[in-house]
View (tube, rainbow over the protein chains, first blue to last red):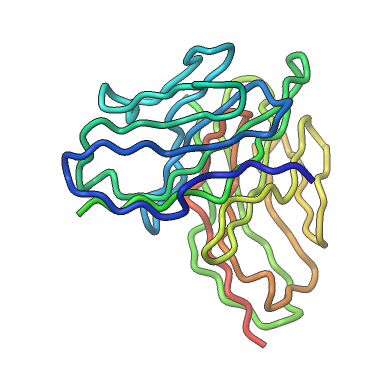
Length: 116
Length: 108
């Protein structure tokens, strides 16, 4: 069964450094998402991406964040200058397009980001 | 805006006990509703979903019925197992609004 993959599984970085989290969505999916989950808290939506542009973003997704689909398979989340409060589990998700009908998001296993 | 209110946890049950985790929502229109499960150290997995009123989603012995009149989508299982210990999230729509999560621990 196809699945969403994410690398690395754990990233440790120093405050102020840039990080890039990578995701490979399911190959025929068209919509891509990033979420984060601070330890012990709820899952929070960051951004959705469709047709090579951001379709929706939350208040969390400020100028320090950016997303890119650099080729036909990868979907990346960049944090330009990490802060301590960026420490969280970051989940990528993708979904197919059922022509406006509700559809299921498939989540990757997550990347745990630790900012020191 | 959309919101999901989920039963506060943690919930601790004995094996074979009956499980209910409450979920209510506030949203415009008729959103799709989802339950996700997160096992320790793992990512989110879709457990079940319902897309319209009175739909019942079911999977692995879990069920939830989309109740438009009470704006609810309560998760139930008749007989829980130790392996069901996880965090359960109720969620709304494709770009999901998640509840706070309910931690379930099942003891043998």
